[in-house]
Length: 184
Ligand SMILES: Cc1cc2nc3c(=O)[nH]c(=O)nc-3n(C[C@H](O)[C@H](O)[C@H](O)COP(=O)(O)O)c2cc1C
Image (cartoon, rainbow, N blue to C red; front, side, top):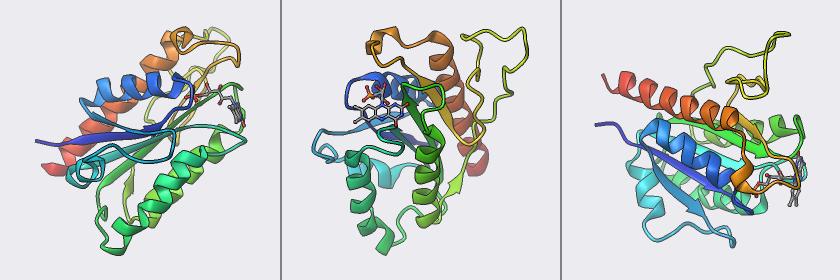
C-alpha cells in the first residue's frame, strides 16, 4: 500500500484547511509543523515511511514561512543519508493575494524536493480561465506547478472557498494516484 504524507505549516489555520483537503484527496497522513518550526513526535519517521511527501506552506512576504524554512533546513539531516531520494514530492500554498507571489513559494518547495533528489508531481488540472469561468471552478487561480488557494486577508479559515478546497483535494488525489502507479 502506498503512503502519502502532507507536511505543512499554517500560522492562522487557512493553509491547515487546505492541507486537510489535500490529505483527504490523497488519503494522506498530516504532519503539522508547529509555531516553533518543529515536527511532532514521530513526524520525521512518518515522512521517512512515505512514498510521497506533499509540502505545504502559507506565502508570507513572498515565500515560505520561517517555520517551514526551519523544517526545510532541518531536513538536511535526511539529505545527508539521501533518505527521501526517489520519493514523490509535490507542493501547495495559500495566501491573501490572487497572485501574492505564491509561485515563489512553490519554487522554494520544488527546490527543496530537487535538493532531496525527489520526483515532482504537478497540479495536473486543466485551467478555468475562460470568460465563463467562475471563482469556485476548479483551478480557477490556474497553477500548474502545485496547488494554490487564496484567502482574503480579513477572512477566517472557515471562509476558504470551496473551489480552492476542491482543487486541493483533487491535487492530493492525483499525487496518490501517481504514487500508486509508481509502486506498480
Ligand atoms: C507575515 C505575513 C506575510 C504575508 N505575506 C503575504 C504575501 O507575500 N502574499 C500574500 O498574498 N499574502 C501574504 N500574507 C497573507 C497570508 O498569506 C494569508 O493571510 C494566509 O491565508 C495565511 O495562511 P495561514 O492562515 O495558513 O497562516 C501574509 C501574512 C502574514 C502574516
